[in-house]
Image (cartoon, rainbow over all chains, first blue to last red; front, side):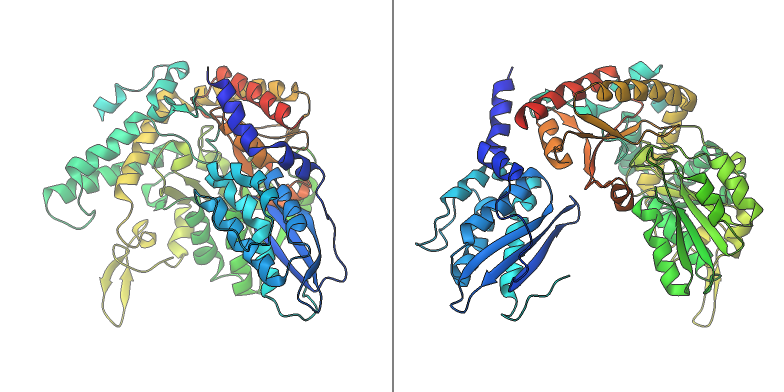
Length: 159
Length: 413
């Protein structure tokens, strides 16, 4: 029986860190004074979230929040995102989007966004690579980040 | 087609071995296919019929004088005759071959509704419908100024008949209603509903995509005006389907698409359209697929629609009771009459996570909104897990599903 193997592969996807972030998402909630916001929707899955960023005059992401609903992978990834990009420069935060999407869609670890950015906590998402149908769940929040950062500095639009 | 008949199973329990795709391991486990409502597997007879045609008989239909074209036409039109008898249509002219249910519904929206609707008219649907029985009506309402109105469903997933009947009036020009809900399995009481619609002079289109695979269909007894269904839900190839319509209505309707095969005579000044059903079949059709669909009809008849209905009814009852006995499972869709489709949730585990965990154990289910987002919204859910049973499933499949749920509970404990 390869039951143990099967279970381990699933545990690789649903690591404790993922389950923990999915159950207790960090920075969950709307930021009323957000400067940037964007919605991420996976129409096929029904995953839906909105990301809120507060970017200060120095172009630093000082606060990140999100709200929405989705599978454990999409919720955990969004939660990890908020922890990862807080206090990064806009440039470095956007570089994270490229790094993470590359990392999840390619076999290797991908190049680090910048030397300064610590992406170690995102290793928890590595199990997703083995599940092509779930990669879009894991990258949803990061696409929303990219879309939010592309906006001008003016007050964020909602809806 | 005697050589294919011989390979058919003699009883429902033997049918499983007629489906080659079911005989495989997935992720190290025997495949348990519980997604027939999305697309059913094909029996070897269908696969062979398509391959035999492609190898020996392929040519364009209705065109050539040569032997292969004649053979292709015979096979293709033979399939139409089988479909005509299968749903008890009175006339083969009423069998319009389409790419599927979606095209059939769009055809009615554009050729039946669009020329006749105007502002103030209404199209009535129910809250149970699949997107393909919603969006074509929304489009034609935008084009004509007509209004789309929707009958509520209750907590069990039954259409609220009081509300549905209250919405019926002389303003309503068409009722679009599913025979069986793909998301919740509800079998609608069509006889009552169609009788009520008749009293108001409302034309009725039945989306039969989920009805045809499960039960005997007699369009004349139903009394509707249009009945649409898909080949791939009834063990035939994808890209095939049927719009059945009353001949008198189809005669009045303008063509849906222009092109070859749907004309008698073309000049740059004028075009004379072909007779029914060819008026609605522009371009070279899915010949191989339709031939396969004809064989799927042979197959279903050899098993027997009544046997299929009884088998699935028993199995669905077992599925529902086994699922309900799992701690944390909540059944979504508990209608009075249900086809062998069962949506459910397990604790607060998102259906997608459940789908991945079950797939790991060889169990294929559908997860998500099932192209019925209004239904999900009605139940306040982002989606559900859905197990759907076909004639080839058995109680062992149900047991595997229930056992596989245990792993999901462990991981999300």
